[in-house]
Image 1 (tube, chains in turn green, purple):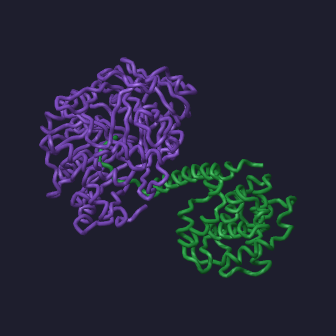
Image 2 (spheres, one colour):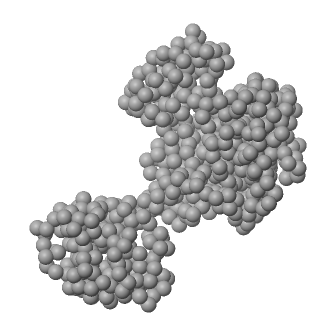
Image 3 (cartoon, chains in turn red, purple):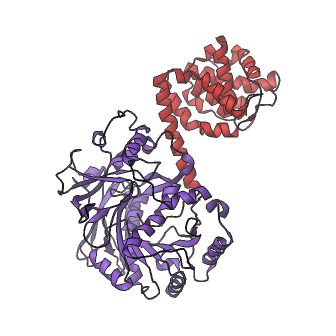
Amino acid sequence: MADAKALLAAWSTRSGGEAEAWARARPGPSVEAIATRISRVPQAFLDERVSLVALAGDILGAPLSAAAFEEDARVRRGAAVGLWLVASEGLVEPFAPAIAGAWTALAVDALALRLAPVVDPAQWLSDDERRVEAARTFLLWCGFVPLGEDRRTARSLLEACDSLARNRALAKAYEGHRHRADIARKLEEARRKEAAARYSSE
Amino acid sequence: MLTDAERWPTLDAEGAARLLRWRTHPDAPAWTHATGDRLSAAAIDRVRHPLSTVDWLPAHLADARRTLHYGNMPADADLEDFPTISRADLMADIAAFVPLDADLERMLHGTSSGSTGAALLIPDDVEEVARGFHLLVALAAPAGASVTAEGERMAVANLVFQRQAFTYVSVISSFGQRAMARINLHSSSWRDLAARARFLAEADPQVLSGHPASLAEVLDGGLEAVLHPKAIFSGAMALAAPLRVRLEAAFDCPVVDVYGLHETRPIAARFDDGPFRVLDRRVHVEVLSPSSDASVPFGQMGEIVVTAGENALLPLVRYRTGDYGRLVRLDDGALGIADLEGRENTRFLAADGSLVPCVELTQQLQAHGAQGWSVEQDAAGAVRAVMAGGDETGARSALEALLGAPIELRRVRRLIDLGEGKPRRYRSAVPD
């Protein structure tokens, strides 16, 4: 099993920034709709014999960062639940609005790399609160604010149910990973954007 | 790429006209970039004034404790309790020195070549960078240089002298939207040298800034007749006394040698060949033993260690500069740095007789991945170089192209293989 800190580090590099995710979030499906659909995940998706790479290829047509950690059962199950949410729009019915779009692979990775290392996906199925946490996590990284909520409310509700915050050691490690990824991303953005005028030689 | 409205959010018609004038001037060099200061109206007001230095150090240490690196320092820790850090610490994990609550929207991308070679990425603060112009004005004022936003003279020309350079024309939002430019004096940037002289005569910058190689070219290139600077600022490497004398004789204006690193921002300055005066800004200078965090007795030589609080995105505590000097008390009681060593200004003789500034060798060595190096030219012109890490073949051909002659280059694996102590990067026995 991969180290939770290593998985969170991978997620920090992958995520593109939490502030950015909130900034782009638009009204989406309800938390209840997503949570209910999570509870109906077919066993076939959770079957460890099914290749995550193949499943992602079939459903997303794109690779997942989580695939690098497929040998970790939590990661595999977390990704499988996310892939089920995406696939269910065709197999059950589309969400309102539909979730398929530019951010779906990121949302699947969020479940696999951000939440699964902290809360085993088995608990998403057995515990209502953890299922809501999974639903809110998925919606954020899929580019959505839950139906009926504004960004501020949605953010505070996700923070309130964030299991990572209750694990001090892991939360501190994650804060470091996230900060480093944020700085690297902002420096790269600044480099690509443009320099600023300078007045003397250093 | 930004739009002009993003580069100068308050740009007015007069500022835009100045930009257009210098961008399209018939004698203008080929500007390689466009860049502005990004200042909002509120930021313009802030950058005109220096940051307060009243009780800055305790607040600065509190800022530092909000970084990953210093997160475990006790709240009551004094400055002396903080272990020193070095460039290698910043190279290894720059993000660990940025406060967790820093406003990253103010971040600019800076790079520093530094004294041991490998480039370091630095998060610069947009307001601190803009404040840099007003620091020049404030430094020049007591020496009798009145730099004003009147008339159409360029406010400042930051001069470089290298084959390839990042150049642009800009306006200074906080200085009446007067023009400034980063100008490469190298002949390859201009249609011909007459165009260079005409352009500079018309721009006639109030302030010239640069490093010794570019300032030397002002004189060697016969530009003293067309320029009338009110103040000259030299930085990045040591300004040799003979060059200062020539600049003062040519322009009869203050010539200010500024000591600072990109990481720390300006630390100290001098108007003559005496000690540097530590600037009245958020900077605290200590001189420590090179091998421990202990201070050397006041007045004795040691490594210059700086606590620097001007860049809110990089609050450094006890940063080892790699430069050496000794603390002295100036006549008015202010703190000074005497016998500063470490910065270099070496030029190498190329086969065609031209003198190549060491900054050009630095660029090539860094481009080929060298982490450090030493390059020596003997009196007969032969060049022997050692590089730590990097692509030996690529570096050799780049240096040979630069100098127009074969060189002897040896690659070693580690920086330490260059020798103990502070690496001396450049030495040339040919007459400069």
